[in-house]
Length: 259
Image (cartoon, rainbow, N blue to C red; front, top):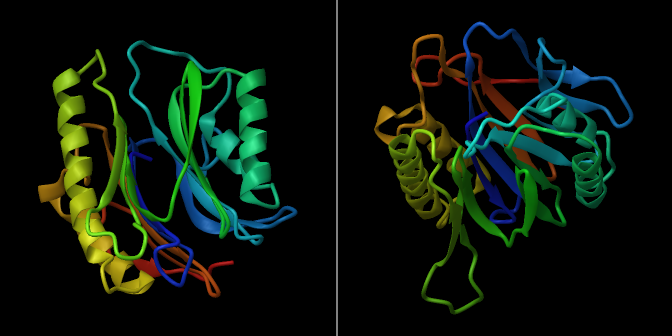
């Protein structure tokens, strides 16, 4: 997955996610569904490696992953999607984050950004040989291929936005990397503004519009590669998942019978 936007503890529902998955068009996958386990998981499935790129479990733990363009080719000995799937077996975000840390000590994975969140905490991993972890404050965030940015919810009475970001310019395709970072910042500007006075459903509706609008550069159409699907997820007292099994510019979001 290559564009992950989310609002954590910004609304009554603790997490709202709008995300596009960019992938080789020939790579087989199945749409989100209940996956048996303890706890049970609701997630799509990569049918080539058996993992997933985002999902949540019945305990309310959400995990999602994006690519991270690196300065050199780094081969992993295990699919990153399996890391996501197995993190979803944990009972809370703290346990899921601990599992990810242990896995990164024991195995080699290609670079990634990975979000782990529940109602109590949200952690964002940046892994590229070394690993850093950001403990996120409530706010709106965008994660892409070259880093992430966010607008944190400020204290009562604050007049300036609490903006934060962590981007890098990859040695390979640096101009494309700069363009992607600029796109992510524009997406953040729009979705941070959309959160003002909104609820999670209204914010997700705007998120779906942004993810499908080519002006933002996050709905991709290439030769053999592009945006294969898009998801709008809400976690709180009630849970909802709307899914487009195709690029959202031409595929409507449909409600799913979520876990």
